[in-house]
Image 1 (tube, rainbow, N blue to C red):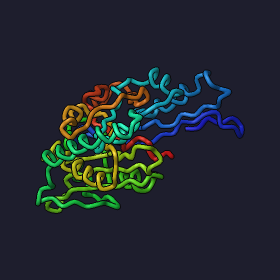
Image 2: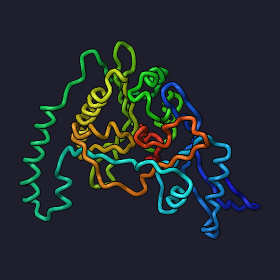
Image 3: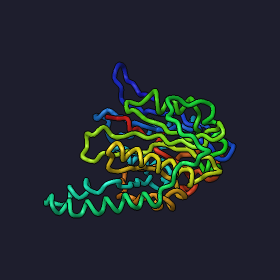
Image 4: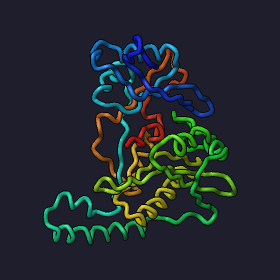
Length: 303
């Protein structure tokens, strides 16, 4: 939505159409993204007016993420869910120690045994992919992902509908970042996938970010774990330092320690806000413990 006076743009809000699911039921929603207001009009309420205009025609609006300019508006107009939490699993410890220790000798003395302990822990705890599974690197999604969505782990949770059209656009067509997707198949059916990308090395710490995932309810956390462990093996071959993910999913958070993940200090801008027309069609929309929200709807593809 854009507000224009003569040939001058006064403000705009970027939106993305979403479809939310709860069990077999779905409903249309809008994800509010960038909010821009002419600096000369800062403080006059144009951002609020734009948002309210969108709300009049939208049964559900979601705001994922914020910045110092928009967080006040989100607090004012949206029901706040718990912030998304970032989790990280270190694959090597040297990059952490290099930032904290001046002495290279001390760093090596600590890093070598710690990295060996991490390697031993992975060798003991990580499992191999079952013989009945086959792994594929996807360049496109087809309707097999929609069948998987119907059998998804967390069927009764609030989540974003995954369709082949949406995922192909979001992961392969729209972004500047090159996303990769690993999928598991069994007897010809897709039973899980994880989308990820590896940062291009502009930062000191080389990171693999897990962006989106979906798992068959028959496998649940075990299926998720198998794919994450496979990606960690790939990350080690690519000399990645840490694997991370950011999401809102209470049930998954309780089990991630089993894969070596720990939560990082949260950002105040990792917000999730929800605005519903009354009465809310899904009664759990305002309950953060009922949501399963990945980073599929967060713009990591910004340079």
